[in-house]
Image (tube, rainbow, N blue to C red; front, side):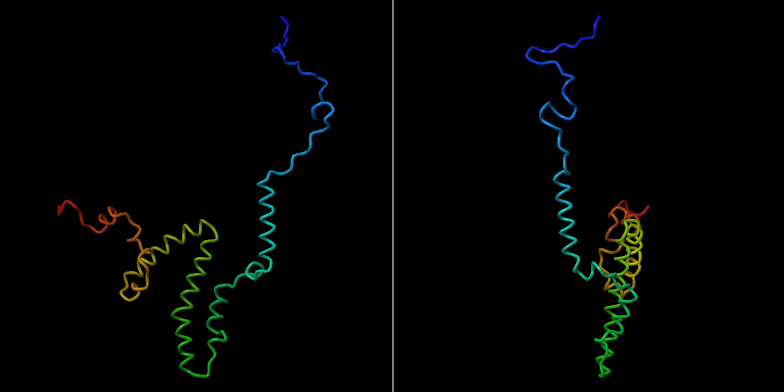
Length: 168
């Protein structure tokens, strides 16, 4: 038996004379460029880089937490001849600026990697839950940051010690 291939009527048999690069007389197949989404991404990246180059936050290193607290504590706005204005500025620093800078610094540090965020998140909820139990401090702790907000109601009921069946 011979191994021959048959072709359907109207088809021609493949020819060994056709070069691999293309059909005879058409020349080589041109190299394909990058796909359209790659060209679009490159264009957007270069436009974004050009737009952000003049932005101070993009080209300078961020202020560290210690530098931010020092700037808030000893900035020009705190220098005053009047002692009452100076006392209000110092109180404003310790009651508003320092806590806000510390919280923002910790959140910025924690959000740099997912591992930090998944570690700091439960720790933040635990600390907020403890601080919520202190009468005066509990007024400034938002409820959505405490464990009681995040626990399911069935687990919360079980943890509190009450049951639906009454006393056992």
